[in-house]
Length: 403
Ligand SMILES: *Cc1c(COP(=O)(O)O)cnc(C)c1O
Image (cartoon, rainbow, N blue to C red):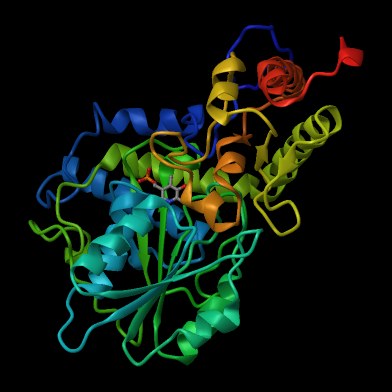
């Protein structure tokens, strides 16, 4: 997929790469034979159809593992990050044989982690939700101080999907190891954008997903550290015993092949691509701030992902703005609507409801162009000024001199 060098006004502009990405055409090309001619079941042991599928799957396992510096045998294929997260957290926490187990997480996790923790709380698991500062950061001393004799797991994401905060995995890994607690990280947004190294960072469990790195939807992986001490993970899906018994079911071979190729490409272009998206993100952010000086970037003061900016536009509803910036596709972050309540992440960093509702997330990616960014800045500026008009008329006292 060649990025167009020119932008024709009116063409859709996709600035929601944090929600999902298009499948890279190189990935798609690898996948297609595995739907049609190479359709074998990777667990069929007695013919070439099965062997071909198995071989492709094991190549992919190697490629996926390499992206996070894991060994192929430490990768379990799942249907996506949500399933990986459920397997990791429930798999560690659920077989509580003695006492009431405890788990530590943060107030800013993705709903897949948050709601899995809520589910476990209802089952008698004690959960500590670490608060964050205005940039989304946790306090590592507070993390360490919340570890008790009952703590089994620390679940801290690698990078936040709404404001981009990057978490210090190596430091958290050290704390976890020192106390004999397992460390799980949701690296769905970090993968392919910042280097990940499970060995160096002492990560025990890590989840990520193909569709956030230019692979297909419906395929993900859970890294489960091998070696001692052995991780006792209880499977959440029972059946034929595929994926070392941790995830039964016929493997989604085309998806796995696509995930492998997406991971290979992500690793190959990581440093170059993150530089490129950083320039595009900064171009967008600085132009918006220059033209709309009372806009405010969330988490701008710390280490954050290179590809996203989440801004509050004073005196505008985010959902109105999203609707008014056609043909630009952006996002409110996660589940942030007047009916669904404000985003827990934006609340956790200390925003008021109004500030949270006034926020919009733009995320750029592999196929974003400068021309698209420049057009977006114009569209957003115009929409903000237009939407503010009635709001300001309602809220600003009128003096005769103004007329
Ligand atoms: C997208 C996302 C998920 C969910 O991934 P799926 O593969 O769609 O289930 C989980 N965590 C984070 C941080 C995400 O960005």
